[in-house]
Length: 165
Image 1 (cartoon, one colour):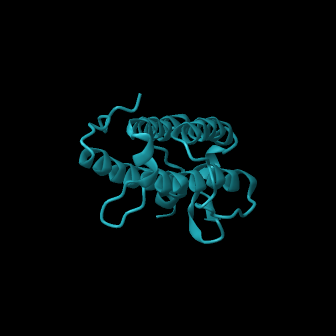
Image 2 (image 1 turned 180 degrees about the vertical axis):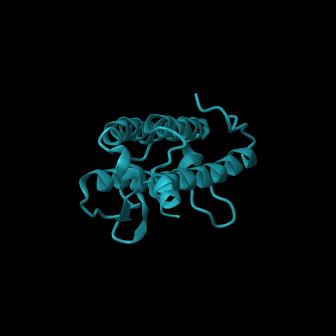
Image 3 (image 1 turned 60 degrees about the vertical axis):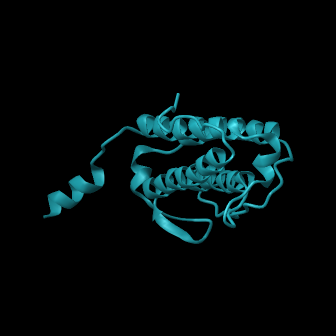
């Protein structure tokens, strides 16, 4: 039984580089979705009490780089999804692009062994480094799906869900 436990904690399905590419593929698709929104609707449009897509993107900003920074530094950060990132789509896209570069830099600082280590991000969300990053991705996919619904209801064809180039 002991060998099984050791094998489970050291098993690797994908490399860190492949994991990063998977994550960045999702980010490229989310960026396309942001681009597809009309300027006004990006900040104002909602359905059924959901937040405008710009507010969802603010949440993604509050998680990705701050979460990875915390993983790399070990210093607990604040979860702040209400920061001001500007009032134009162009400003949000510039922030998205900067975060993409920052994610690549931070990712390079995460050792392979670190993915299995326990963390408590933002002082409250517990799991392994790997499960935390998977949450970052899952949360982004969830909000991107809401954005798809918004675009379709506006009569706009969203990017194909598999178009991650």
